[in-house]
Image 1: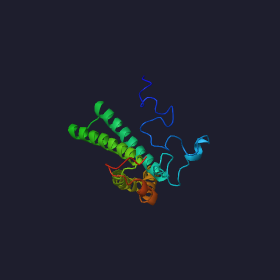
Image 2: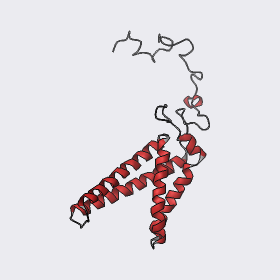
Image 3: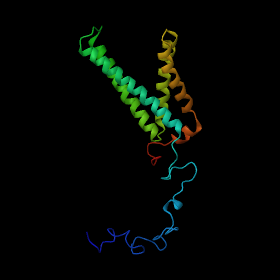
Length: 181
């Protein structure tokens, strides 16, 4: 710790930092309440980025729950495979297990990056919801109404929210752009 180094004591004495320009040493409301100068604009988070809409959170939760369901199914399927349950093709069963695990990881990534405001997870979430619809309708009409509704209601909700203008505005960050949050 060197008292002569301006990098180490830059915040101690206002106006003494050689990298400071005149007028930068004190905030406009010096001595006032700290929250008076930090009020966010409507539509912006306190850090200056866009506010995360509730629709994004709902979609991410739905997708994460679907990923968890796939992970549980993969664990159950793997347990059945290891305990010697009869299968038509062992390697076909291993492939199915790998697909369940891969789709689960993919959906967890979609949920995570959707929350961070990236553009590409919207398409992944939409495709996943369409897959859920193709399973949910036959389940509903095939004599399992509660299981069918448990699949259809979240999927339809997520699809509707994916096309909400606030969700589209928030989830429009390209990979090379600065962070949305």
